[in-house]
Image (cartoon, rainbow, N blue to C red):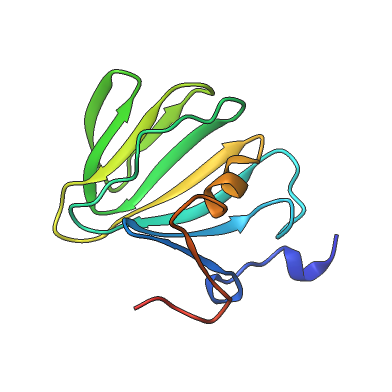
Amino acid sequence: MDETKRFIAPEDLETIEFDWGTSKWMSTPDVTGAESFSAGITILKPGRAHERHVHPDSEEILYFLSGEGKQTIGEETRSVRQGELVYIPAGVEHSTENTGWAPLQFLAAYGPPGPEAAIRDAEGSTIHPPGEHSE
């Protein structure tokens, strides 16, 4: 594997912007060559949420880095905060909402990779090249 693909800096990656926040996919088959999983950082703006959705073929974990929010998995909704992790089985509808005044930041990981490509291509997304930031 190319040595440059082992250490990933956020400024070296594109930023995917939505009306609810941003995502940076730090490990994908294209970025690191990882074949079994993908991982990225998502930031939800205060008071915002992303739509309820499902990843039919990938399991997902979310590890909350900062902020506070509500996580819905199937029909269950719970409060989440820094230091907590949630597991979302493949094929189960889910959503995340920022209920705090500060950004809600979390690491999302999929196994196997794939959903990150659909998120990148979703309607309403804006792709900012590496080094360029949204306002």
